Amino acid sequence: MSKAAQRISNQAGYVLHSWRWSESSLILEAFTRSFGRIALLAKGARRPSSNFRPVLLPMQPLLLTWGGSAEIRTLKGVEWGGGHIMPAGGALLAGYYAGEVLLRALPREDPAPRLFDAYAALLAHLAAPDAGRRAPTAAALRAFELILLREAGQLPALDTQTLTLTPLIAAAAYTLVPENGLRAASCDEENHLPGAHWQALETALAADAPFTTTLHTIASLGAAIRPLHALLRQSLQHYCGAAMHTPRLVREAKALASPEQP
Image 1 (cartoon, rainbow, N blue to C red):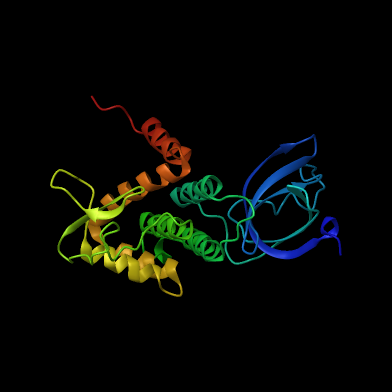
Image 2: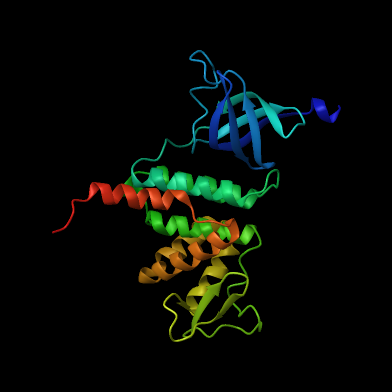
């Protein structure tokens, strides 16, 4: 079969973003397990009668079928993969943030199955009822960010100092610096974690199910999740080249919803 006639069937994936193309079609940015991030043309998807329209939703597990060899493939079929419903409230915003991170961080057609599995696990966690979540949304996002940076080759080993390769001291403070990795924190640096925390995170990331293990590890850190958040945000901004839009939109929405203080 020629490359132009290739057809990929029932590939697990998620829609990260879509935009209008012509009067009736959509261009999709999809994240698939075996092919990474790909662009798909969904012909006629905007028509009320389209079979694509009710299922091409973000944060929903899908089975995608496409054909072609151009940069933008043609979507041939799509089915809901089942499993969970759409997140709501703050969890929905967290899901949009994760999708934005993937759009910014992933090159086209670079498979990342461990990251795909982590994204799927994150969305399942976000879709669970509040009472059913064993860890807060913030911990889930930090676990996802760590796995993304690791799979992108942007996260050094977290059980040694990057430049000297010396093991961490459990009680000593260390900070994460883009391009320089993990190093001892100076007395005037606000964001740092003790060596024992970094070592625990490294062990969790190496597990067979890294999202679940890392999520539980981060949830046990308590107040240390705040400096971890700041350090990961700095690393992601450096890697992606710009700050994410979703957190800014969330802050602006909260400011509009809060009455002004006298």
